[in-house]
Image (cartoon, rainbow, N blue to C red; front, side):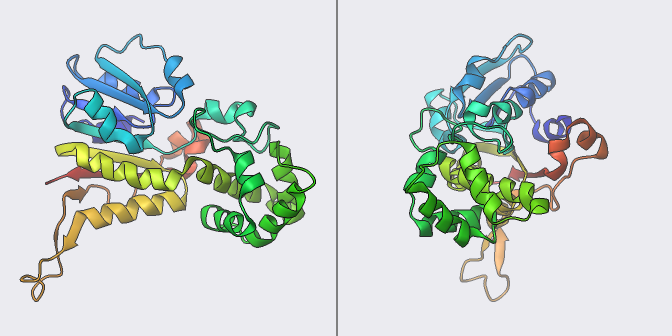
Length: 297
């Protein structure tokens, strides 16, 4: 956590955004490194996390906003902030949210098929499983979960729901169990639940929009740090950073060079991985990858 902060802070009295506020751990770490005249903006889709946050010990201006980071530009505009010095997106699932069976994220805790980060949004996992057609379900399981049995699972879902609509996380577990050997069951559950969750929350579309919004709002010299946890989202981050770090050269230069510098510089050409100590403290950080860029133009 402190490694992220060390990379991110370039102006101790600047404006910093935690786009995935959660329980505020990153924001507190930032506050410890910043001066009293700095401004912190915390954004999260889960309003309950914002409402329950204890602001004691934070001496900077702290603005908490119930929103998706894809709406970063609107959030800043509404608070009369023109540009920021640092932005952090930690794409991991909050442990408190995961542990709450009523939210439906966990496959090892029976609960309703919800999976919404933002409880005010209408689309739930139950609606996806009960209303999407077989082709759409197959595409979701294959593209968002890289599930090899996607077609067979989606067919079984459609066949099953005519007699028994999907209500509980156990209903989805039963489908996965039909097509998975016991020794691969947990990994298959992880893939399938991930795929449905990504669809419910439109995570990849939001990530692409959020990355664009972040670069648009960074001041020159400002930095964006993104922590991803699986290859699909890391690929989106990596490719977007590559695209924005160099642009096709104008026609008059193309005989001599193919590209020109873009509006960002990639500071981590290979992602920063967690140390052994970090993994020992937090086993969920094992798959984390940190990528950081700096706005140059």
